[in-house]
Figure (cartoon, rainbow, N blue to C red):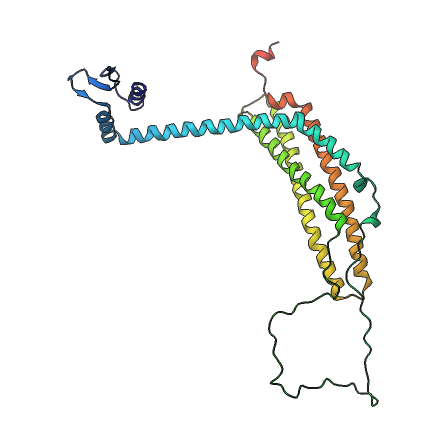
Length: 312
């Protein structure tokens, strides 16, 4: 109401409450009575006088109100993050572990036959060029164009064209990457959420009774290492395509050298093994984080016991 609004201003602008009193008339028009002089001032005029005489205080009041509102939003974010992290730990992690075990049991990951990822390269080996020699032992030179004006000069960038079309990506490996990549990204997000959750649980620095805090810091360090490993897994997939493309460019440039073709097969086999290992590591990281946090959940949530609890 307007009365509460004026009282709020009077408290925050250091007015003496004994000088002013507020009354409400039947027309719901609030008026300010100055008891010492008997002057009647309407609220609009009163607020205008406040703005003229107390600009700095009024500005400070509004800034402080906005700061309080921002603090409430930050605290609300922290509370929602804690709730989300606890639900993820108690329900989300076990579900992901079961799901990853099911994926690792599928034939695509369990039947580790390396020959299944071999792919035919669409680069044919050209026939050897036979040199045409003349009878006198000299090679025939290319004939010049008699009319140079008729010849057209073609400008632009030279492009190497493969006779049989482009070289496609390794489809079995691309299918595996399509499965593995979302779980790597999810592990990054989940580890980041747990990291922030434990960071909010760490109490202020005090002397003594820091055993629970040391458990929090050790758990936080383990989560940070998992986050770094997940980022490395994600970077490994990107580097695979770049490295494979460089080897294929050698195959296109030197089609007669079979070692480059064999190098492509070996590189694909290595990536298949790496993807299987990454999937196992993601599952293992979920298991280790879940086990570590559940075992120390009480100390993580309450790192310091009160003096009253320690007496019993």
